[in-house]
Image (tube, rainbow, N blue to C red; front, side):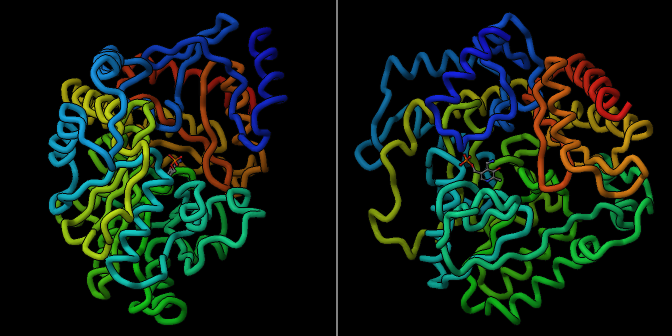
Length: 455
Ligand code: PMP
């Protein structure tokens, strides 16, 4: 990798050393599900920029939309004037796909920025301060979002004081529970190795409905409902390891929020925009019946162009004075045009269905690999799919670094793969356009990687 090492040296010298990089690939270009690097290699992309490149790299319709918009209007400034085609066109598209009742939108540039704005809206609306978030969550790197991020200590280490008035509740981490085994939704709810380990104290705290019990105590002991502005939750935990809660979890949260006038914020930054086979990850358990007060989207919405936002109920913005929300680049015409093209491609190419079908293919292949290698869990939905490794001896705890060793082996075999969570997990997040052949290729390479590490 001559080109790679040269570039790596310059990056090491001049770019922030605090930015972690999961591969040493130096890309020349990318197309569909493949990245072409400067050393003449072709890599299968099972990361899609962390679930961002939803329509595949450089989809021709997305490229054309960017080119066309760039020749018409690049910047308007949402606080100054409106771009007709891009911004108004996006409002029309978004209102068709956001959950019913969410009729107000706000556009920003990144997931973190959207999360910070959601907190502003919730606090202003309720005139309360506390925010309840969950263990294993990742909401971003700005000061507000970072204070709600608990997936790994290093995201927040050394940056105190963080945003105050945050309370952390346990999130369901059902590795070995019977409810999950019996769950009728079938598809991604596999149980791999029943009863391989004793029920440890972490599992007892986080299995099935135990987190809901904890939340009730939190509202009695730490954060009175009258002081709780919002509960913020990922419908499937993203960076935290693709934890997939039992179906009762989100509806119970909704009920608690309704009871106490607490704003329910669902962070769909990673699970949203067709990634799981539905427009929004929470819709797997709730259908039309359960929806958030604020929905946060980013990543897959604009195929890689920086773009994010909120969809809220009409009355949510009541408490906010004019001028308290905004930002120089939010709702940028180029970003809106890219999002328009992305949403059109998702509909035209039936990518919700493709995410479902390819997700099943991937999950089934991974479950088969679990027969041979120390995989203790396969989880997620659609093309948000992860495996967790256990010990060689069949225990629940893998040696530290196993997941990183697998992704490193994948890199050597020309496949880009990411780790996830504080335990030893690897996640698959290919473009939603991924083909049957490409998933088969990914499974075959992954099998070779497992042989490299565990064989
Ligand atoms: N929320 C979730 C669920 C995320 O996965 C992420 C990014 N990984 C963020 C928020 C933050 O988004 P960004 O990196 O665009 O700020």
